[in-house]
Length: 99
Image 1: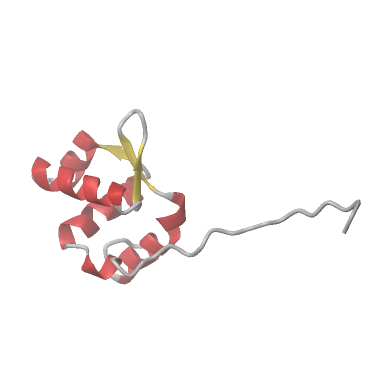
Image 2 (image 1 turned 45 degrees about the horizontal axis):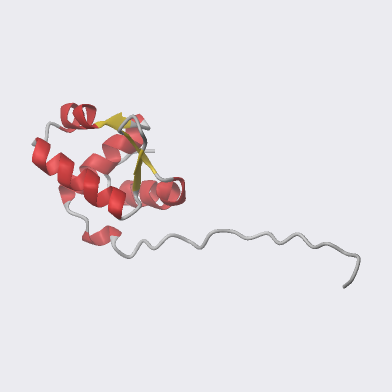
């Protein structure tokens, strides 16, 4: 209609969680550690999880590619806002995180 302005509001689509059941146990452990601490850098993930550096690096890279994690300019890893709720819910269901 002429003379009227409309505001369009959109919400992001629900994140695709179909790949979560395919994640290896090491990935769940690492993601749960990052969720528990809110953010960690690479050395901190290695120290907290006591996993080999190569395993941690692979999981972090894979998780960033899958958009489960973000990595900022300071190389700090965090759960992405879009996946935060579904990923925490999934980790709790798998008994990797406690409420």
